[in-house]
Length: 125
Image (cartoon, rainbow, N blue to C red):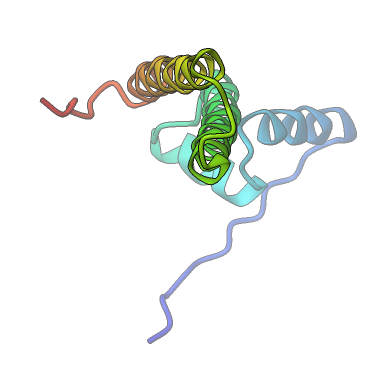
């Protein structure tokens, strides 16, 4: 079922339209959605939220890379069949633990950024 929408025309001169477009780009909304939110007093996205969301994506990519490296190191040990000496095995195990610690730090940073963007969300216990 189609919704009933009424189109409203608004006229702008060149400078005003450029300013409107710049504001729309800043909050990543199209003109219609931007004007609708402004006119109805709804929330506009914050530009820093986009930067934080992008940082979260980057951190999650690094976290996945860390997991792949750790898995490759463990696979190396599993397939070595005793070819490595005890010092080498210990060093690889230390590296795997460092990777786990780094992943935990990354997860904490991601969580902190998430709750900065969404302050009303509840943290898990």
